[in-house]
Image: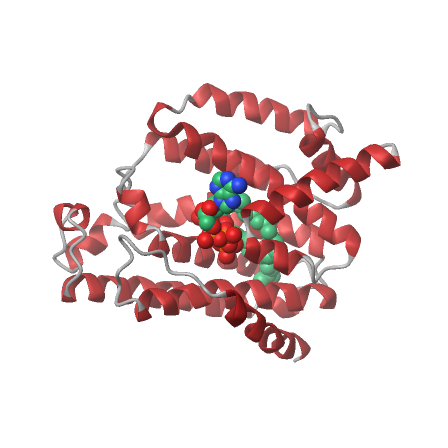
Length: 287
Ligand SMILES: CC(C)=CCC/C(C)=C/CC/C(C)=C/CC/C(C)=C/[C@@H]1[C@@H](COP(=O)(O)OP(=O)(O)O)[C@]1(C)CC/C=C(\C)CC/C=C(\C)CCC=C(C)C
Ligand SMILES: Nc1ncnc2c1ncn2[C@@H]1O[C@H](COP(=O)(O)OP(=O)(O)OP(=O)(O)O)[C@@H](O)[C@H]1O
Ligand SMILES: [Mn+2]
């Protein structure tokens, strides 16, 4: 155990980082009991910083940064760390059965982001989604706790991450295009006779609408797979996970109601609507 003061200070830094970067996750984290809540902030801080490592450097990203980050991760799992965020995660690793594999896989996902700006198939995109987001599902399970830690529960936890990442991709097509990135599988673009040039010209027409509906349906189906995993979670985790699922899935509805104008407009769920959805999540968690 870390000296108590040091540990509190480390978790406080993670709490602040989570609150600053993500309203939805911060909000959902508050529905957990304190020990789990703090571990989630520590994981969030590590994931966010991993993501920033490639996002901020963009094309000029140096893969050696990730090698260095990976060595640092080994230190964390060895009980140490280089700053307060590392130390908080090291403490969470001591308190919960976190495995290093998902963390390594996420770093691998960030490596993909450096080397790749197009995805040919859904299979390829799925690998990316597992690495950058499905892994968060596995990390979360270790903290939240499963009543039955079976392969099906883990598969469904991964599914929730993948569905959220797909949602993120559909919300951020414009932002990604401006960084010369297309996450939508090129095989799907062809299926709807929509070209890369169309995408860079922000063409919103019936082909784009059909492509969006196809991907929204794919994400919705994965959310349904994920829902069936929630009963495997220890009861106190069900409400927050339902809440995060419902709130994030709602973004898909917004993409649609914005008339698929996701190139220059960011689909989001207004705060009041988030609150209204909380009791819905609570009710779901009771059944
Ligand atoms: C309360 C709760 C659900 C906690 C998990 C919070 C946590 C540790 C999140 C880490 C998120 C993160 C920073 C990941 C780095 C890569 C990344 C950016 C992934 C995307 C997240 C969306 O973030 P955001 O909208 O803020 O993105 P912008 O930067 O604003 O564009 C992702 C879409 C992935 C998120 C994936 C999850 C939270 C996994 C969910 C799965 C579970 C909680 C498992 C539940 C268990 C069962 C059995 C169903
Ligand atoms: N302090 C910050 N510095 C840089 N980027 C930030 C900061 N805070 C938030 N962002 C980014 O600004 C964008 C705007 O936030 P967004 O609309 O996604 O809301 P959010 O707080 O992330 O809520 P949600 O969790 O629902 O996505 C996000 O991409 C987020 O990562
Ligand atoms: Mn966000």
